[in-house]
Image 1: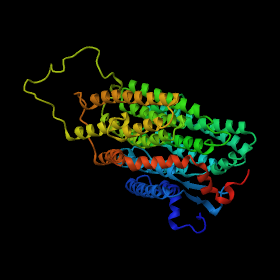
Image 2: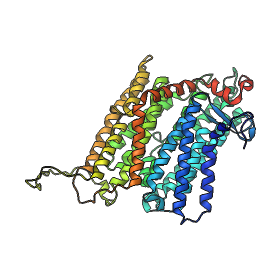
Image 3: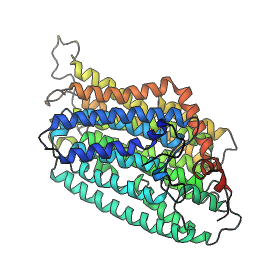
Image 4: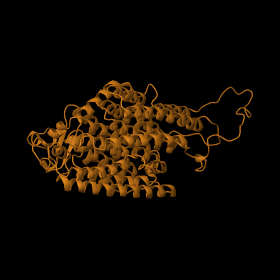
Length: 530
């Protein structure tokens, strides 16, 4: 694989998030499964390198889009990887979440079954490739690699509950893959290309034949990614599947729904931001986003354990971005992208917290009602000399972590969840406030209250209510993983100004698809006819 002529060595950073994890995973599959320490070390080193590369790409993509031409074949005839502001942001999100989930797995889950580290790196490779690819065919390839690895991670640790949830998850995603293939086939049959920049160029032509068939293909393709981003009513599988998976697997799987969000945002603004198909599907995206937020809020209100609550929080996060995209407001979309990053970190941390707090409990107890039907005096058994309850250090630390997760997901000041929602309100108020803007404002407000109340209830039950369960044990690697995710939430809030400015510039870049087309195809092909 060679970079384009005259490229600096640093341009090879674009392909590294794809090549490095698949190379290391390939080596791991050839190793003896008993060499767990070596595999864990290789996974950790790979994840650290991916994090460093993603942060470098965030800085470099802020200046201009980086295009890597595999085999030095120019687009649209060759395969290209494109790192712009949006893809670099998603790479950084996946890298931080992946690193923390991996560190958490060192405590116990990395030894619960075979091939964990190899599957983990293959999942990261598929996610990174989906964010970087510049054409729909290779998006399908990376999509399938990502899904194949996720099947193994969902089933990791065995058990009847995981097998049942995993089989349903596999069936749903096979259907999504079928929709993907049908949609891509219709698009290629109509347009004669699958390169995203080339599609945008051809759509900008004054006369584009068979526009209706192309839009049908895009609608079918959109169904596949709405399934992946857990939009209602296609996302019914997510809470059950993620609740059944092991904690580190559920945490890294939280990024998979954001792959669907990324593709919907990318294609909506690149292909349907202008031209004769401008605004295609926007009303449906808005409706799907609002319905997903409502379904997620109702689900989290009804949740009786933290893992299911975290799954519904992932759905609310996805629905928020879809609804903001559907309003057509650039400011709202920028705030939604900022909110997406922080909410994904917090949801991943909540999956990890749930594993620690529920460890050692009987499986049936987790689903019991939190409050008993009959009243019981809480001080009936208290000693007269008792003046308070002593909390072990681990419980106090977990309580602080849980508080940060709750504040972040509910969108309460001063963390990034509130800043993101406030940015969405500001963006909607910048222009004429339409009916869709009012719907989104109402949904954001209700989802905040609907998230806060059940999480507080579950937190009190898990951390405050006395019981016969053993006190939670917080291992050093688990503490490091949780601290890393929640520190990322705090950093996002403390440096909210630069982060929001980056999100604003990202949306401004996406709203000018001709810049993306020029970067990928070059000035010579940008204005060529179809």
